[in-house]
Image 1 (cartoon, rainbow, N blue to C red):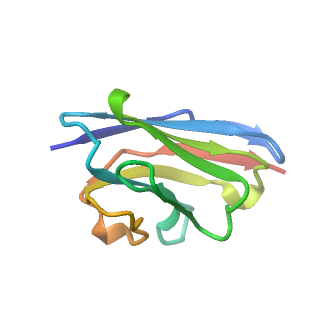
Image 2: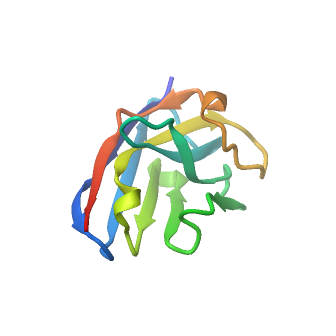
Length: 126
């Protein structure tokens, strides 16, 4: 079992930045693909970005490409989501997710992930 805890959310103005953290415990995430998802009120959970087990590949949704960066530190069981140039449309609850997956393919479908955090709220004011 892997437990995931997100932190770092908050209220920020348009154009601002936030850095979300995802702390894993229970097992090392060194063999896990890690993904970030978000869910806005009344909308389905959507993929934001993710990184393969060893950091060899990353993949982002078109809506955040060039603005968001995923990074991971397996030796510390930490994953980050750096969010820059934030827009009101980025307002959502953000979740990190994990799945054992020794491939460079970053999984983009929520149902493929085995473990989820409780989420952290990000609100971008206009």
